[in-house]
Amino acid sequence: MKTEPLSLSHQPLLSSRGDLKTDYLGCKETLENAAALKLKGVVVYVEGEPAAFILGTISRGNLFGVHFAKALHKV
Image (cartoon, rainbow, N blue to C red; front, side, top):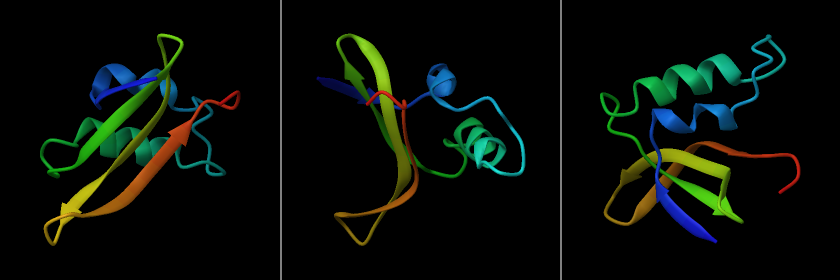
């Protein structure tokens, strides 16, 4: 397993349903504006493929507030 910083190239990890029953659109918009919002994140790879990501903010030194955490169904 490896990790790397989260970037816009990881959008395929999001569900593409985009309806009101998911948080797809909110997560997509947040990911697109992550730099402006000063968000941090990592992508987790399993067998060389991106399998999950986490996106949030760092506050109070070493505290990380999670805004979105997503993984492929098979993970």
